[in-house]
Image (cartoon, rainbow, N blue to C red; front, side, top):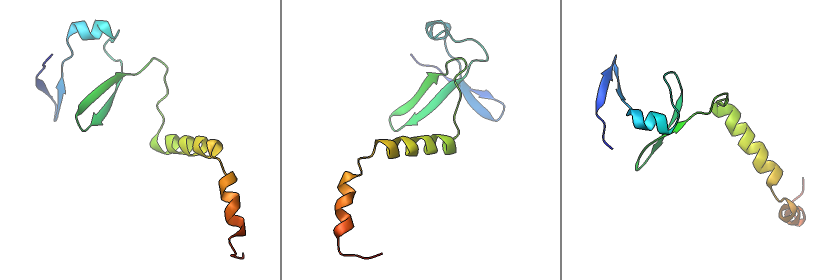
Length: 85
């Protein structure tokens, strides 16, 4: 399916065909996330009520989850490496 870019103020946009809007239950005013990729651009509908995290909050959540999931037992070996505090 091809669409043309249209001028919207100083920006450019695309018009989504009615069949896509109906398929994804999108109406005027709904939000979509834009995911830039090397091979193209992906649009994801944002679920109603879904909170968008800032990059800072998202990074902190990912770091906390990684920290909780980390297996630290292998690091205990380094305690006897001969170095003193």
